Image 1 (cartoon, one colour):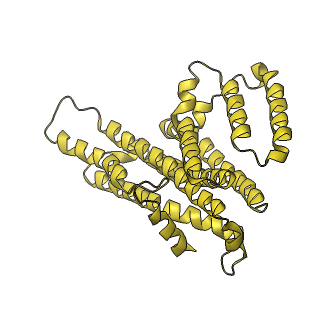
Image 2 (cartoon, rainbow, N blue to C red):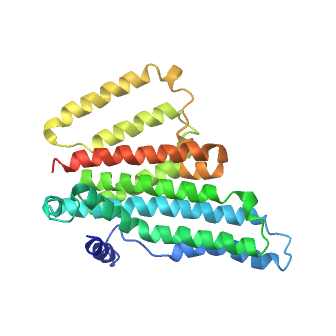
Image 3 (cartoon, rainbow, N blue to C red):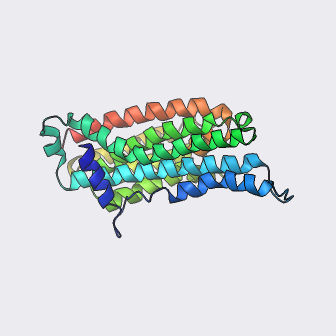
Length: 284
């Protein structure tokens, strides 16, 4: 299973294919920023910002790449399985572990290069510490915690999107939208709209983009509209202080007070989405 999935991921790197992992190039640029800053600081250039700025920029950059790659890779991979009707075959083959084995294999292969990047981030922290940079005062563990938990969440979300849509190109595009909205979209839109209204808009988007079948589409959409009405009435009192921007992995890494709660939320969300995905795949 692992060898098969690895070959499929390598095939998606071909020109014109969507959902392929672009390699370590962009992560290498992010990891080189603190080292470049350290080298330039040796020349005592006055225009340079604090060394903490380049280190945190590298951490934020890696978190964004982690979320984007985990979600799009898993979405494209799972959509290909559904499109080629191979989910049933893999599920019935011996020694595959069933649906859990299929999902775990895809998540593991998609996560492997990302985990390598976070390993290099740990090497970077150690190297800066040896050079006398006070990295321990910047709490680098918060970047690692947010990166790994958001990796689990977006792998699970990507598998769910791919299983629901069944079209690699469409699944990859929707995965990118979901990641960008989570990372920066909510923060930008909350400047003009309240958090509860954005949550309602997200529920409507999910309802219309991920309908299960035409037979239940009307009932499903009707239920969502009813839920929207229920949310609209008391939202000024119950959800008036909701801030979706605080759920962003970037915000969780930026604000240490949010790190623990958001990391727990990512783990719980990954487990819930995994259960929903298992329920959906059993119907295929």
